[in-house]
Amino acid sequence: MASILGRLTSRFAAEPDGRDRRVSVGPQAAESDGSIELRGLTRNFGDDDILKGIDLTIPDGQFVALLGRSGSGKSTLLRAIAGLDHNVPGSGLLRVPERTSMVFQDSRLLPWQRVLPNVLYGQPRSRRRHGIDLLAEVGLAGREKSWPKGLSGGEQQRVALARALAGEPQLLLADEPFGALDALTRIKMHALLRTLVQAHRPTVLLVTHDVDEAISLAQRVLVLQSGRIGRDLIIDLPEDRNPAQPAFQRTRHDLLAALGVDAAAPQPVP
Amino acid sequence: MTTLLPRSRVRAPAPKHSGTDDQRQGFVARPARKQLGRRREVPFGRLLGVALLLAFWSIGAHLGWFDPRKLSAPWTIVSTGWDLLVNGALFDNTVVSLRRAGIGIAAGVFLGTVLAVLAGLSRLGEATVDGLVQLKRSIPTLGLIPLLILWLGIGEGFKVIIITLGVLVSIYVPTHAALIGIDRRLVELSEIQDVSRVSFIRNVVLPGSLPGWFLGLRLAVTGAWLSLIVVESVNATDGLGKMMQNAQYYGQSDVIMVGLLVYAVFGLTADSLIRIAERKVLSWRQSLVD
Image (cartoon, rainbow over all chains, first blue to last red; front, side, top):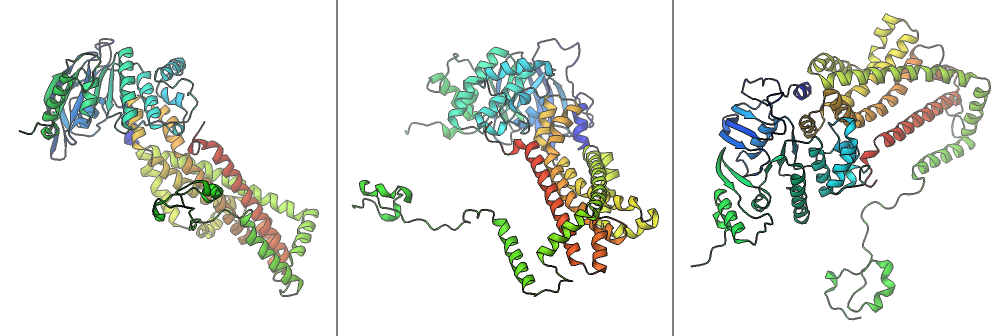
C-alpha cells in the first residue's frame, strides 16, 4: 500500500530502475502541444521482451488507433505512455504531454460517489460548472446525482469519458474503452467519441482489437507485431466512413493481413 | 382443447391466468411447478421460537417442574426486575456497566481505527503495528486479566483496558483487511487523474474501507459485552456482572435472569443502531435507482 501511495506522488520523479523516462513538464513543454515521442522504448517482463525498441512520433491532435493481437504488447505500450507501468524494467525515451488522461475498458467509477463528483475526481472544486457541461456533452444532462450502480454499462462509460475530458487533456489514452459494451451501444459510443474529439481536440491513442472500430475512428492506424510497430498506416478515407465502401474494405484486408488473419477476407472460389 | 405442441414444450401462462385458458386454443394449462427453494417468510418468524420457549417455561414454572432457586418463573423475573428498578440497584449497576463498556468501546474503536489506518497506508506502519496486533490477537484478551490485575490493581483502569483491547483487535482486523484490499484499478485511476495523496485517501481509501470498519464495529460491540461480563464477575464492587455474581451466591436466579435480560436488550439495541448507521452511510451499495 505504501508503495502504491508513493507512486501517486513520485510520478514525475526518477524511476527506481534507472530507466530513462522523460516527461515533459514545466516551461519547456509548449502549451497545447499534445504530441508524443518515443525513441527505442523497451519493456520486459522476466525474460520476455514485450516492447522491442519502439520509435514513434504522434503529432499534436492526431487520432491514432493501435491494433495488435493479444500479447503483442499494445496494453504495455499504452501503460508505458500513461506512466502506469511502475517497476516494469525497460529503457528508451518517452516524451508525453503534461495533461494526459485515460479511459479504461471498465469505467472505474468510484461506486460510493455520485456521477458529478466522479467526473470531477482530481479536479479543483471550482470546475463544478465544467463538470455539469461535460455530462450534458456526453448525453447525461440531469444525471449528476445518480449513483454509478444505477447507470447502464454504456452510461458508465460516458461518465468515464466526461471524467477523462474534465482536465482538458492534451493526450487522451483509451484502452479498449468499448470492448465490454454490446454492439449497438458501441456504435453510439463511436459517434460520441468522434464528436467529443472534434470538440476538445486532444491527441488520441486508442487501443482496440476491433479493426472496423480502428478504421472508422482513426486518422492513422498502427499495428503492433510482437513488440514492434509492424504497420503504420494513414487512413485516407472521407469523414463519413462505413464498412460498405470499397476503400474501407481494402484497408480492412490490409490490416487483417498485418494481424495475421488472411483467412478472414472472403476469397472467391477459383 | 387441441394441443398443437407436445405438452412438455409448452410454456403456458402462470396458473393465476388459467381462467382464460379455454380461449387460448393450442395451449395447455401448466401444472403448478413444485417450489424447491425456501417459501415466503413467516411474519415475526424469529419470535416464534422465543414464544415457544416462554410458553414451555411458564407452563413448567406453573406446574412446579423447576426449582425456583435454579430457574424462577417468568413473572417472578418481571416483578424482581421491577423491584430492582424501583430501589435503584438495577439502574445504578446498569449505568456503571454502560460507562465501562462505553469508555472501552470508544477508546478501542479510536485506537483500532488509527492503528489500522497506520498499518494500511504505510509500509513502515504495517511493519511496526501489524506484527504487534497479530501477536495480541493470538493471546485471548481474557488471558491477560491476571497480568493486568498485577500491574493495575483491580480498579476501573484494568476493566476498561480489557474491554479496550478486545475492541481494538475486533476493529483493527477487518478495517486493515479492507484497507489493503483497495481495488488496484481505482489506484491506477487515481494516478491517472493525478490526485493528491490526501484526496486519494479521502475519496478512495477511506470510503473503500468503511464496510470493513462497520463489520469490525459490530464484532467489537458484541466482544465488549463479553469482556464486560467477565471483568465484572472477576473483580468488581458494582456493575451488572457483580449484581449477577452476588445473586449466584444467594441463589437468586431471578436476579441473574434480570441481568441477562438487560445485557440482551443493550446488545440488541447497539447492534440495531450500528446496522441503521451502516445502511445510511453505505447506501451506495444497495441503491439501483436514484
